[in-house]
Length: 505
Ligand SMILES: [Zn+2]
Image (cartoon, rainbow, N blue to C red; front, side, top):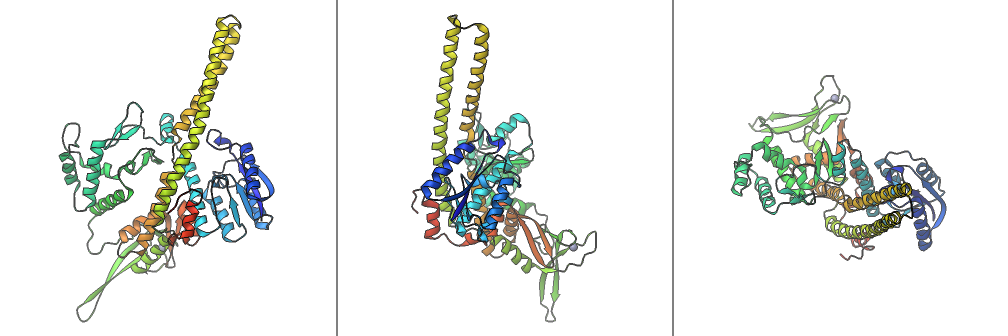
């Protein structure tokens, strides 16, 4: 099999832990030799992969299409794709058999449905990272947000740590907050009851009175509790520790929407507000018909249809069951078998450890450089004091060294705060896909079905009684290979995760 090697480093990545082009080439050559790969070409590119349309990358895809090579070698999946279009193209080439293999020294890929699934996660992860950098907030706060820290006051259950300037879990109030989440998730409790419940555990306003109902609501809907920071209308992945599970948070969210839903007379149309009409773009609404029989009984039918406002439209009714089935199919197509969760967690643990070791090494190097630069400064000062050099030379040289030192210090603090911001978005995708698995197979759970369908897709459109969707990033790729990840993990797919990790299931 023939391989094309591809290296990329973009101009806006200087300061990240990405190998230089030269280092990537050296690594790949060594890797190809070790793995006995036949390289037909070595292609490098210095462009960002944020938006599609890198010239060299396009050429590679064309050459694969023509059959000049059947494999690509690259440092990491994020060298190949940082946007879902490029990621999708690669997976498409794999699906059509034009591309047979991908090799990465830092990521193990196998051309199987599960391998493609892991690849899609790696692509999705790159995409998420890019998304997070394109924010539009004040400079100082932007720095904090990049580090995954909330600028400002800690929410209930947390405290601002003045020494580290980070936000830590408060052992006392966090327990009360978690109890309050659990209490409310049981169902049937009002915000007033929650407020009194919290007051019992001494969580009150500064003046000792129970929390205001708005504060309760804000607390229950604050995604900070599940690791997400919302700031100036945008979301960031937080690096703070959490004490509320996503599952509990979601249950509370559903209970809030349940108690706040305006009481409707008759039937409650659970699946409205999802889709628009594919013909006229009007909202899809629902209505019920009651058919009365001569023997006195009656039967209720619910239909979903276009509101046909403001323009007339020719679209017809869809029975609720049919609408729900189509929605379930969409959710099912990007589902992930629940047993993957445990494997994922094991895998993540190992990856985190690797990352820690790696950044430690880089940190040691940088600190060594810092010590050297301090030493140079001292020597320079000695030379000046002893009259060996004059003050002009001393000043110029000192400024140079000082700048160098600042750069190293900046580098060090950057490495220290890098952390593992990739884990939470990956975990979230994983858990949502598992929720898809459960929801698509359950009965009478239209509220959950609505919730999860909005998580995985948007722009639902109903045309000629067919419902279509635009899947979001990772779910799109999951769905693209026929939902192979719905199958339970087998011994061989587990080995995919663990073989390089030294883990045993
Ligand atoms: Zn319409």
